[in-house]
Length: 341
Ligand code: ASP
Image (cartoon, rainbow, N blue to C red):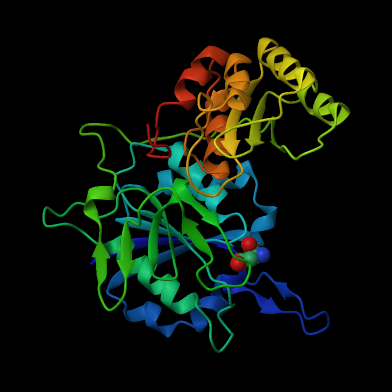
């Protein structure tokens, strides 16, 4: 029988309502499992590891990512696949981070959760969890994992983790992959779109990484942005990397002070990555004069990356102790299918 390890971190999927305040709060895995008797006969041999204290994913940190990597690497040989139960709020950050931290992955790591807690009558928890287990168990005709990568399964859709983003606080279809096709769709059958699924490098040895450098900020432009605000961010010694959210295809106002501050920050060793505020499409700084000036200031293109993937990739590369030049080069080379080049 296929062996699956569930890693329970928390999230709405296992939350219960506090009778006094009415707010949803994290609860243990036993309560979740008691509400899904199907877990006992879904065709896989399932074990569970849970965070000592399950959390709302707003509390997720790079240390928690390291804990998940540790659990997966300690159990890598024993299981055919891993399912991570996680709150939806920061699920795309965790999925992106894990896609970089788990090098040469040959087994499925499927994150899922739900918009409604397991105890709600219309809960989406059951369908999401049971299908995620089925996907983590799936093998191709040669007996290899069908989806050997970090993915999010949510509301009938299997997405590459580092291409996903949370798009709705209320719809059951809460997660979307805007710049990359779905890896599978689940209806009455699960249809795998194999041409889009990552194939592991032959002979590549699974290598877990634990260090992420969080000295990064996400900084968003808006019409009328003031010099003092930009200075505060770009001249801060505690910041080494900036995810710079620009307009359209990577454009910024033609203010001399802005371009000079950006160039000064790059000269001072900061890595600045241009990510569009648009949900789809890609950064093309050469397209407009308002973009070219950023290219000339030494800003790197984030291509068609999500914010979550760009942020965690930069944390990862900085955590590897690479030089600014190496980081600049590697930001534009895909590690785990996070950008289209
Ligand atoms: N606040 C919750 C969390 O991210 C929301 C959810 O799970 O959907 O943990």
